[in-house]
Image (cartoon, rainbow, N blue to C red; front, top):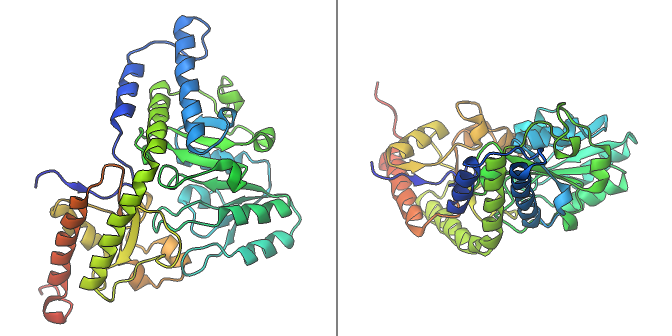
Length: 376
């Protein structure tokens, strides 16, 4: 089959060479960052340098960065440790947010949060609340109006959290300008290692944030346990590289647009989800009428193309995407959805390879202008 064409970067992206290099170097060194001897101080230096790089990626202060094991833990800490009894989350959140419970804020056909309804929900109950809305959706790439949502939250004395795991490194993210109190990040979405992430929390949020696990007091007592030095070092290197390469996503957007244009020519009945909204430059989520998602993923995999049927966190499930369902998409359309997501090392040839394979599959399924039926 040769080298596969990898187009599932929203699930996890290719490790950046610099991140791998610094991780290997960190693994070769001894030293606990809580120790006061030389080796411990060097380990602490590695962590603090990475903290500054991660902060720079989203224009936060280094003191705002709390290292965690990934986006899921960051989301859980932000919500479970927020000190607020009332939580409101959007209907298109990642399971790590949705499964924390809370009142559901509806979205429109493009997956954009209904800000009028959010305002009404907050107005109806004066209980101090936390609002959690992701910056960009992992399945459709749709970007939420977080600054407007954060302003509504402030008017009602609510804390504001945003899961920015998919957005960071793909669009410019400014923690301070967005007006949020907390923001979640993950290293393996930007070319760092899996198993490390960060919760960005401003001074106001840190003042009320409570640890959800107990131990030796690391990360200012908010995330216990000896730090993953190598993982954090890789996170910092990936964050620095992602910030430097941010302008490259204009070219990635051109690849995404070329792919969508070609697909619509081959299949005019195809629906591109979130097409009328602002989206991440790297993400396309669309249907192939007459073919379920699992069939497409398996057929493309056999052709050497790696894509996904929506969220990788929901892989193996045959039910329609909860995100698309929240957008009002019917089951037949949702069950034929495919997600293509480009990354920092994607090439124009990847688009051509995908279109050739997808086009062949489309022709087989819609042979002679009719949807082909399986053999008896």
